[in-house]
Length: 292
Ligand SMILES: Nc1ncnc2c1ncn2[C@@H]1O[C@H](COP(=O)(O)OP(=O)(O)OP(=O)(O)O)[C@@H](O)[C@H]1O
Image (cartoon, rainbow, N blue to C red; front, side):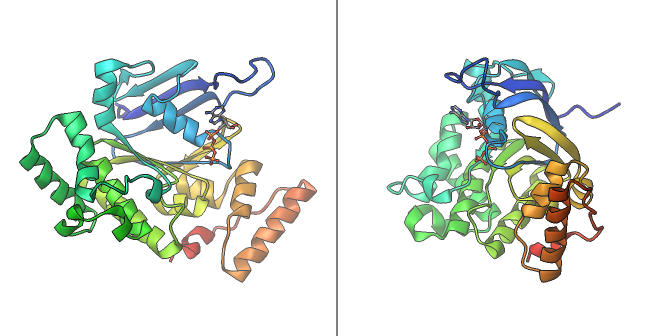
């Protein structure tokens, strides 16, 4: 029997209020995707394609106009109240900018503790022990709890944001451009940390990014969004190395890369796309070479 998806979106459409109904395009149109337990699904697309809106729909932050969202088989499309609080425990999110994710006047320990205090009603000694455990899980020592955000680098703050998200023992982590603000070497460290946490905690990820190199590195499967619609999906290797849809090919060709040979290949792909011909993807992945 096929495994029940942890997250299952079926024909989900979202339209923001205030947009002119007849003339505007919805932010999401009939999007279907699923994430299996312990799986990493990359969601890619250029700016405005609807990636964040999809994450918000899963988190219940925007209303779903049509379609359904199921978590572990339960319909959560319009969950509210107690059910929504339970879901908040199971689905956590890490955002792009670690500097905006923290209150500068609160210690790291206070900030990391927030989710369990709110969601699980834990007592103080349990909370302190769990904070120390989670900080250690992301590679920081216990003294970090007493310090303030300004005393940490961007990469360390993103580790702390991940520790905070792990506090209530979620099953799904939505990473919305979670490594985009970090420079390449720090990015690689955080990606490795996420892969390691997945092994140890059986976490599943919905990994939202505009960066196909990152997705190639971390995802099992990739879904490509364009103007709120899924244009392509498949394994990370297939989508990143032999994309079928011209939009995915263009995304790949636009991704920055340091290697001159790869740059030449990209120029050729762009030239062919402009000329209306089919680009010829090579089996060699530039994405791996782009990662340190
Ligand atoms: N609060 C909002 N009100 C109205 N329209 C919105 C709102 N948020 C997003 N949109 C619109 O919905 C569409 C999808 O936006 P969304 O932020 O989901 O895209 P994205 O792929 O995450 O882009 P980015 O990578 O720039 O964050 C865009 O046309 C955007 O302008």
